[in-house]
Length: 187
Image: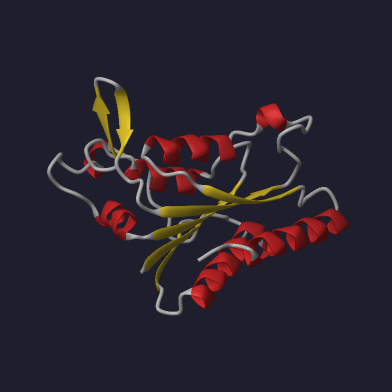
């Protein structure tokens, strides 16, 4: 089984989303020791903004797209930056949303073609943006990723740590709660 592990936080070792993805991958490796893991740090080795030259011809593919399509499980670290995804993660997403490869248009509307994989997204947010919070309307990270992956036929799973910049105590409690959620992830 193949797992694609992506981190996109620019904060390095202090990143909560990087800790989360490492813990998720370790949990999944413990459940499936033969797991083949491919890792990319989109912050330290960023993709450029998408250009016409980056798009594959209709009958071709790219290494990034092939890597995504061949993965059984994808674990993504997605910290909230300015209410949405990092530009590094957006550049990767731009390379996997390819008509005819991960979705197609039909007379009934778009149809996702990548639905046979598991996608686990580790979301970290400095403030509280979850449902019912005063800032819920400003949350465009989880909602965007839910839509993007749904568009290509995947129902993503989310592990969310939020409020990590409210106070050291809140950060510690939020990470502890996330650790419990990760420990409960199924194989």
